[in-house]
Every structure is written in structure tokens, then in C-alpha cells.
Image (tube, rainbow, N blue to C red):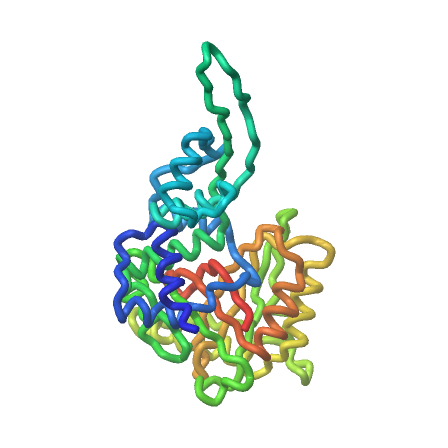
Length: 345
């Protein structure tokens, strides 16, 4: 069963009118079909802000709208559809059809019959059937619409990365272009590693802030199996000019390379769990090696106290390294990624 045309239609219903059905769009949609799933994590605040900045919706319905149908309206509609609506009037089905035809977002029905039939001077007044229609709005739908908007207007700012070691998606000049690139980072599981060029996926926890305001460093607690402690970072204060910049880059790689060489997922998981304790995470950062030469991507994730510690300890570090993950985010200099959503494989 080919689900791509259905997904294309779904994206159009969400309001992206300019997206045309063509081979390029279908290829993108086919590669992104996994977004039709419940995410392991989604940052509704960051996503909402980014959605407003890029899509710029014209309005937002807070309390819903009232739709009324008279008895005569219902008869006219039933006659028009010649039985397609069915023997009994179903406002839910009708409004759902109306929604898909007009491009309105999907709606949910809270139906309540109001009004009465009265007779005055042999004139019959129709009873009114009033229905409150509320727009279904969720971070997942905003994400899908944001993706559709990028496909329609900024396809060159979409990066599908199935090999993190590739450099194009993280070049400084690419990152600095506008609008911010939307990156879909496919992190391989153990069975996919041979084709990725990476020895394993590692989530090296670096720091976090708790919802009570306490900030904790985590990387300095990642000891090697031998008991060796992490090295001190060399700031190269005695070098200046261009050589200092290049020297800093190499020192930076070498520094994080130690953590990669001595990485143990169980230890990383335990460090996060102990760092959080009985509290909740406001934000948490990781270093993700994206090549075998020490190059890392900085991941910034903001659960804002809405997820338990297991999401960012066991699910991300342990299970994610074994089975792989799909990460959606926007890029900033570093390279650094603001994570919008994470999906399990």
C-alpha cells in the first residue's frame, strides 16, 4: 500500500497550499514517513516559537466556533450528496469532509442539540442544531506542518543526514544561511553501524540544569574503566592568531576524543541518573561524536521538567545507542543542534 499520496494530502489539509505533488516532494515524504509516529521527546515550547517564526499562522482559535444547521439545511445537504452522507445526518463526518475539502485543520466535535420547534400562525420554524467546533492543535501537528512548509518553500534548507560523518550539513557557511536549516539526523543502531563509518553511537552527557535552578556538570564524572579521570582542557593561551584557532580546534577534538575512546553507555546513563536524583531536568546537553577523528556535535535538549529521567538516561543513552534514533533539530554555530524532537526506531 502506497501511503505517500495520503501523506501528501494530509500535509495539504494542514494548510500548506503551495506544496505541489511532484517527484521531489514524494521522495522527501517517503524518507520522512516515520514522522507519522509518537515522538519519544518533543520540545513544544521551542517548536511553537520556531513554527510561529517560519509558518507565521494568521490566527489561532482559542474557544472554538459555533456551527448551526437547521432541519432544512440538513435536508438540503442530504439531497445534495444523494445518500452519500447516509440515512442519518452525521455532523462529524460532514464537518470532517468539509475540513479536508477546504484545507482547514482537522476538527473534533462536541455536539449539543439546542432549540425547539414552535408553531406560530401555521408557520413552522426550524429547530437549530448547534455544534461547537474546536481545532485540534498539538506539537506533533505543528511539526508536520513546519516540515511541509520547508518542503514547499525551503527544500534546500532540509538536510536528511543518514551518515553523520558527512560534512555538508555542519559546515559553518551552511549553518549561517537563513532560514535555519532543518536537520533530520538518522543515528544508526548496532546492526546499521557498518554502513555508517562510526564505531558506535555515543551520547556523552556534559551538563544539565534542574527545574529548581541547580546546574550540574556531568562530563567530569565520566571516568575510564581503568579509573583514569578526564583530562584538563588545554586552552592554548601561549598561541595567538590563526594558529591559535586551528590549535584550539585540534585541542577540542583531542579532548572529546578521550571521552569517546573511554565511553561506556552504562556509566553515562548512571551519571545522568545520579545528577538528576529526585528532581526534574530543565535542560540537558550532550556531545555526540559524528566522526572517528574527535569531531562532535553539541546537542541541546530542553525537557522543561515534563519528562522523567529515564527518557534521557536509559532511552536515549542505552537503548538509543543499541537500536538507533532519529533526531530533528535546527542548527547553530558550533556545530550545535537545538533538538525539536526525538523518535525511536
